[in-house]
Length: 235
Image 1 (tube, rainbow, N blue to C red):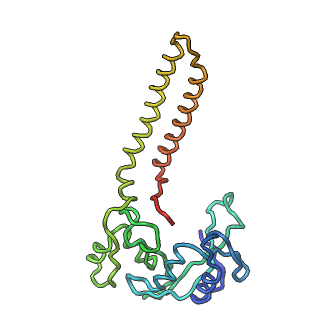
Image 2: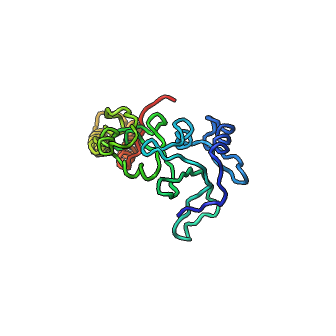
Image 3: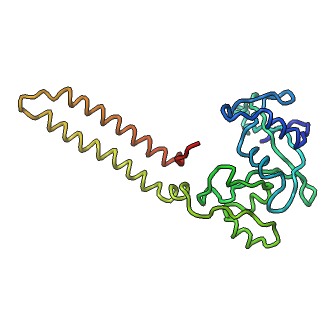
């Protein structure tokens, strides 16, 4: 459910607010815009400002912004202090209001990145229709549409990670069991060894290392299961 304030804002006024308050060191900081604390930074805003306010697929042009915020469907989850954000709208060829979005040129499911370089401005109607198809395929199915950017269609980190995630999960989970089993047997052997040496401190230290290894590999396995992986990059 979306809650909207009544007032429309021009494209120019919102873009000016974003430019005036852009701070790469504080991307989550909010600033006052006509009585509401608004965050001026997001990949979506960056896409609109750098790629334009015209849908690259159908040519529909955005005309204004509204302040909107998402509200939970169930009252018990309702947050009256949920902050507002800017949503950009235009009027389509049928005279209906249409939301504008950022679209992945190469879908993230196909290995596309989430950076502005892989984004274009697109109306919600075209974005939904395009879905996870690659630009060339979508263009073949819509020969009368504007030419979409081709992007880099080579498999990237995200696609490779998606395809091989389960093997990594299995490997780390087996690793947890393997480390525990092997080292437990080894420490049991040491504790039963009667060669005049006191292995108690050494055994305690190794047990600590085993616990840390188990935890680390379990955390990695769980993150992989949940798709929480990040491409290594320098920013």
